[in-house]
Image (cartoon, rainbow, N blue to C red; front, side, top):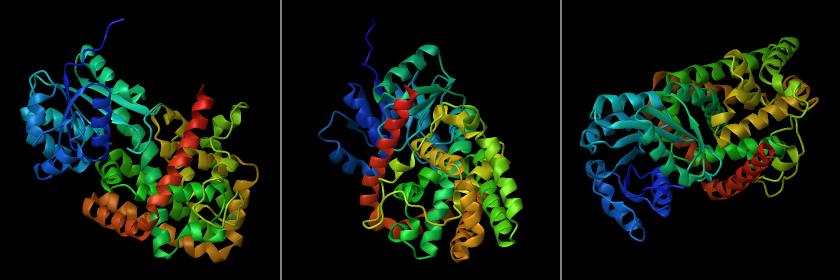
Length: 437
């Protein structure tokens, strides 16, 4: 059995949360690692990494001249100008890749600014920096490179113990748009609506139970991160624009049917969506729920409200997700090969609502009979349409302002929510891994 040659240097440009995670993991696995961030942050990161074997360099030029495999871990909105700045300094014969969530702009930046003697193999870990990478999808895109170089990249990334998926840039962007765009849109809108209503949802007895626990934990997990993690995918990926716009249209149209009292039309539309999206669940007698209610009932931020009790709720946000998949002819199970932990939880939530006997009918009934909660649904639709406008306009600054405004409202709960969310995701991930074995 041949041993892996670890004499080559791995370089990281950009020391955000994912860049740090990569640098530490590679170094701990025995690779020589150098890294840089903005020159203004040089002393800060030099001190932070002084007890490690990671070499902190002044800027991306120094990393590019030294490293044999260079990973740009920068914001998607900045990838073009950062590669333009440091790309020409790339070492002859180096392999260059990136870690952004949208690959076509990244590939275009590489093709425009990298020397022709540099190879391009880009990557994407389909999870956040707080998630254990073991068993999670890791996309590798061999765009302009020899097979031997791809094998080298696989060896480097192997220390993450992730599940490698080989895609093209176009395939990657299509799948991430189909799986992540609506996921982020729904939970960003929930947070914005809760803030507009001056609600802390875990403090309301009516927002109790497994479904609500999952919705609250996912929303707070998203808002505890940096805005650019989500803005990059939504704005730089044209394929994601269609999904976010469809979601805003779906929740608007469903609410209009509710307000107009068109019960049968709403039921007909939602059952058509159920049949299309969950057909294979119906056809597979061995299929079990991705998320059992008793599991989600364990993870509540409320000190007083626990368990799996269900209170009246239209769950418009979840109905809109399945309707938007149906309208765009997306079958989410087709994309499990490179799904994020958030997406798998979201799919489990939608599956639970639509496939638990009687629950969808109860949501439809609640939508018409429990009018005291309709103001919440209206506020949610306003939030969803506001987010879709920001995405359609490609406005990163407006995205940042909306995101951080809501983020501040929930900020005091992030430490506890992160701890609880990690426990929930770990339990769910372990259950799903067992099912896969």
